[in-house]
Image 1: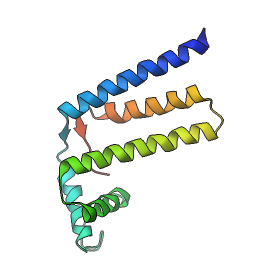
Image 2: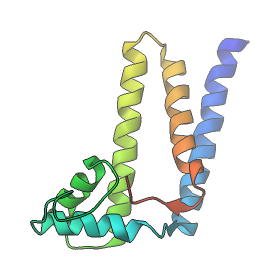
Image 3: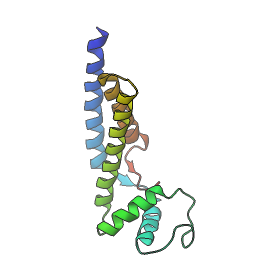
Image 4: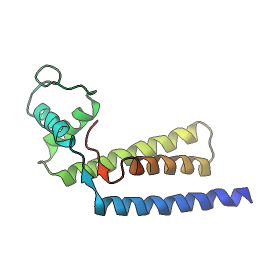
Length: 132
């Protein structure tokens, strides 16, 4: 009976995650700090140097990734939100592969990945974080 329960839990979590993503897309708002971090990314894409020309107290990885995105596309919040979804899904894929490589079976790996995605989308409610 427990072997049947795990796939059903995964299906329930997948439907709940789908509901969260749909709700999140309809009712999202961008945090108040996001323009500051996006301005860092814009300034870096224009040639400024982080920590030399720009005062920032965060680690640079996400800012540099966003600055690369700035250099490819013109500024649009929707582009950054789609890019954020891409990063989240790529991270969940790496988590899934890690779980498989650590010896977890397929159902457990899916369960871990779905819980990760639920925590990412439920963590801040409908606030979309475009910051590190």
